[in-house]
Image 1 (cartoon, one colour):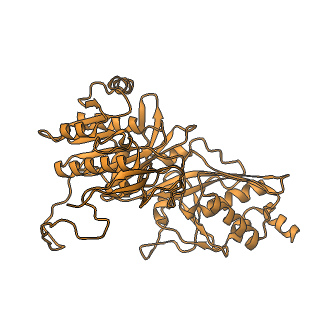
Image 2: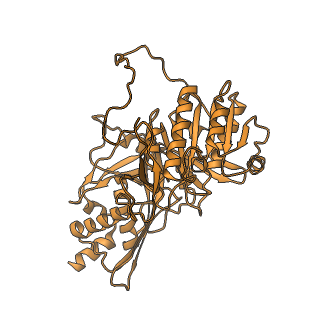
Image 3: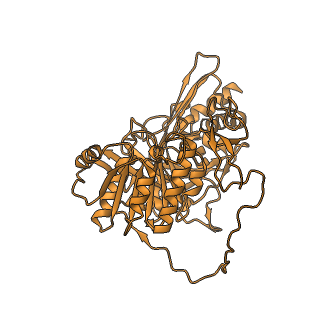
Length: 467
């Protein structure tokens, strides 16, 4: 009989070491390593485990049926999940505290229950009366949702494994669950990993949809071991700024749909409302006669979204001018300013540069380079960009404007909102074919960043005077 062994596990990142240390070498956290009992099935010496049974392999091609989906009744949530919920799938939902995760899932459970699905909501953070109070505020108290407040995983598993299981189970949150066979406290790496593993096994075996709510760290990533993100089928991030009423549900992993798909919601007194046309909402308060403003035709997953890029370039009295960015990559802005200075002769060394994506949306694609360059040059020159022009394109280090994905969708969205022109890269192609612009919009092809400088004469004159 093999003797029991112990191991030392970092409670911040899950790294396993042979002995205790004051600082974890994997993540750098101090005093985060704790002693745990090694699982009985592990073999530290690398020897073979107990005798197992053989498995049967099947051909890659089979007679499988399409995976059925269950629509939640919330169109934006269905869009992000790929068209609905798949039986036996596990979804991990993360986001900042108070952003609306519990509100969204409670609304989804109520909508599903009213459509005939059986839903169980297990809260480990709030009492039953607190959840009822939220449901009453949202007008959902009449929905036939089964509600419980529990944190002992053994009790939850025993309840869900008896009789006919619910169609949808929501666990809020996975960090509050604990398994009494482990000595560590709830929320630690070992507890989160073990609880998630047991819940996922039960969901796969009984075939119900499982929602796991996860806390996030101060860096914005999901707390706990990264193995949990690998174990689940879908990872959703709920994003938004406290000062804005918009909320973005983004899929960063989805085994049953497209990744980087987004759903847009608006936080109201009666809960989260769907935003069917986010472009119109993001541009609702835009003023087209202000220098430093430009409309970017972006793409989030398969959805085209038009947002306003705002820039402010002001003289600086500091030795090192400030570069402040909200909603975009600050490193990308520094690179873009360097390209404009080295390839176009526009000096920014004596100016502070502030950049903001209006509406609280976070943009990650490089196709926003051209729009950011327009906004920055417009603010520097004091000349407003044309109000009826949408912009998209990537700028390389030599100043060339490169093609981007799905230009046809971007142009169609701009034409739908009444834009008459667009500044685009020269190669407007998708799938190997040339893109035909929609009726009512005229694309103007930009080949180099110097073509953008020429659109703002004061900036071009400043370049001539300095050189």
